[in-house]
Length: 362
Length: 243
Image (tube, rainbow over all chains, first blue to last red; front, top):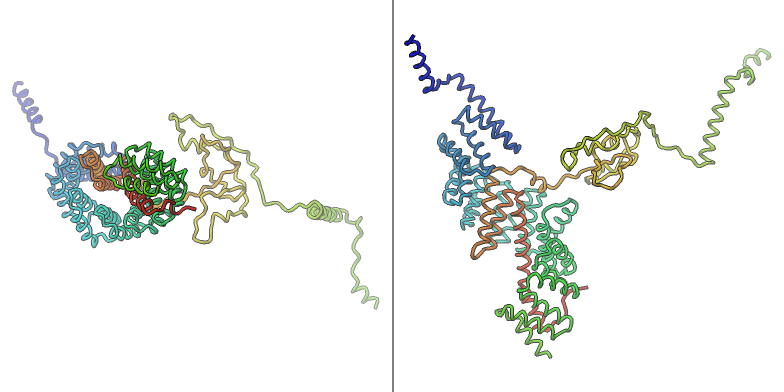
């Protein structure tokens, strides 16, 4: 009887300490099932069904803990939930299995960049991009980080080199255009963004960026044409873009129209911009300038009053007010306004010179 | 001669009183024809469109269950209007909905008394509860134009990696703004990256638009001194341009 108890105790102890080995057939079944679950989790992630994807991928990891794709999806889900530490742990686990996995490197770079560990992120992107040269996301992340680190020219050169691999990738053409804009190479940016716009067809974002490049490149008639087209198309669609975005387009259009010698149309565009962003002193000042050029002196007076109210320390408001008073044949008030401008900005010589010119005439 | 006459002569028609049914039928046909001619030429009536109304009773609108949320579901809204029986006029075709050139149909094609396909699309014109316009007698066809590609692309789901990168770029822009000497081009670059990576990041889009607007307007207003100097010191006191 005692030996029976002893045998039973030994058996129980053995079961508690040593896991039963998984038969090869069972492991094969688990791998197959995990593979199917990983595919399902990926689809659920793409459909933004994150809770379901989490349950599915957890089940897959239980069946196949060494699966790199499962760990990657799990890391993406953690990233989605802004749980960066957990995501990093999943990616570390994936890299222990396959240290050369490009996606794991890329996502690690993303997390490092969030943690502002720029050098580590750069190294991760470089490895990912080298491992998978045909993945545009890795390349773009690498180039953007280079530009953020002050190496915009290197980023432009890198992206231009890769145009052979991605000749019709709009994102890369657009990125080059934005980088050229940042480097104030506006003519080159116009060429690149024109190419991007041709590839993308009717993409309003790229056309808007092209219009901005045209504006800063001084190609005002083309800018007016493009912005007018964009605004006409947007008028048929309800609520495209925020009021600030709409105002931005109209300010660019108004300034370009002023440059083209069409102050009446410019007043119209800037008036709409001021309706959209009524708290912007700069827009009111632009509007006042356009109204003076369009000989709408009473409108200019109101716009200047609004601009001065919003930005009382801006000497340009008083310079323009002085000119407005001169247009109204009120030289004494003009001199007073120019004097106020000089008081606000002693380094600005225009107030003093204009006041002196008025005195001379009188 | 007598035999020849007998061969060529036709038998006389029977008198009217001998065939009363035939006479009555012909008389009715003549009366109906006369009535039609009178209607057309005297009363100025014209033939109406073919209009074979269904004799089926109108189906009452099914009871709508109260939606738990304050906003009714689209299905409930769709389910509200009364279902009209289809009126068949297969000869009426809304030609404006099928342009022969490359142009697209207009945004809204009213289908007043038009063909079968128009009237079988109840779901095409849901009447929202807040609309004060009365429900139309017949449903209308709404031809929805395809949005431009830029709008469509905004609906594409952004990946977690791109969202995280967009957050990084947005944070970098905020850091630059709050720094000692903020560089506007650096701020705009980071905000551009953020918006490109995650178009749904509306804070970044708004901030970028505000800063870009300010920059454009400020850049142009920077020429105020030169403009006024040219006008005043150049002895030109009249505004340029104008009507």
